[in-house]
Length: 70
View 1 (cartoon, rainbow, N blue to C red):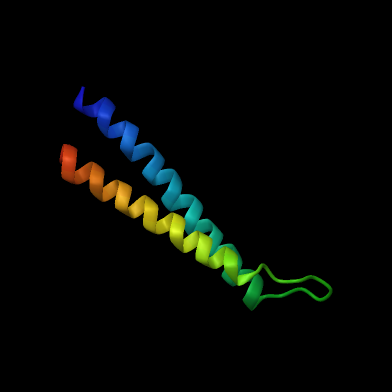
View 2: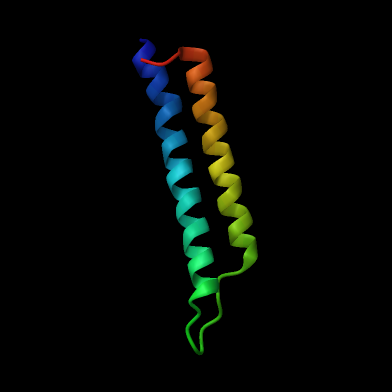
């Protein structure tokens, strides 16, 4: 039962972490390596990516604090 509860918190945490870090990297790369004729991704996306990464980190810490490390 403990593993099921841990997966209910751990899987969304990893999805948030991966998605957030991906958005951060893509935003930074679009700013650093801009293409002529194309607008770079807005800075608001960087903030969104950092927020998703933070939410994933907090959810993962909650999983570890409540259910422990396997």
